[in-house]
Image (tube, rainbow, N blue to C red):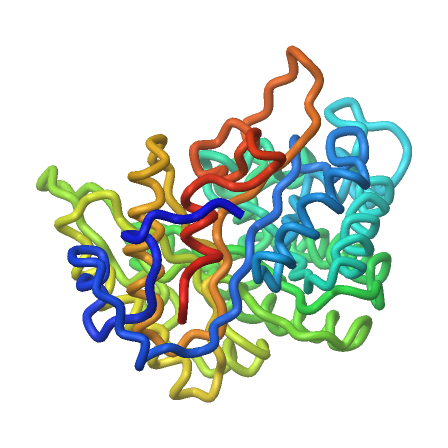
Length: 387
């Protein structure tokens, strides 16, 4: 393992900014926090074509050596089901790796991770809004409001919610009891458009709001996992949301508290709570971001739930700047009562010449092609962090 510059090595100071600004280390405040990586795949397939067994073993052995304990595998709806409802095998005009063939590759990845001593968190990573979700949501899934195939259809239509539950049930049944699964993240970043009558807080086709339909879905998915598999359950929520206001200025909101209002039914549905928490790019929002994230985590622990950070990262393309962002984020997390934090993202693949893939090319990717797969400085920052 390469030696990390001293500015990136340290433990949790009483003030999260102290370490970043001065390099001061306060070893009296160390604690045990698990670390991990979102382990992504080219084209989101986990196929042996792009990640053969030797690539997986190389990565997972390196992770174990470096103290990584958990990896997340992301399952997107369009990989779990074909273009037609209930399609888990056969042909698909848009992709070949889907349904049971895709899940076989996921099980292969879990098996090798387990052999390497890593725990796997399976994450259902369906997107919700109108921007990115159309490419990852099957074409038959139609939202009755926008008439497009977006994930929010499942909290606006009883029929589409049933379709999601059917797909979810098939997936859990197919993968259940696979050695190496640590927990299930049953939904990623659930949210809904608007909460006022002038926005989108409308009554859906079953006479309930989107919020109520989501909470019912949380309960249903939790019961499915408990019945079919029995391992731990979480949901990865957005902690905050940044946006540009009508005044043209950047703003930030505590979207978790605003969306869900600390509804006890959410906490009853999960074994632990997860948050995705990215340091805002606008430094003016950083203090409010820290306050919101702190409030959310403290309030969850006061409800006797452990908290994990299931996504954080940086898309800065300069390696040193990206590592500095990691250090600042991790130093802040070290002041909080979390049980683990998992970085976004690591993607290692043997892609043929001429192939392009958004995951391997992503600025968030902290895998480096050199030094036999050793990660970038941001990865070194993660594994050298002393809690």
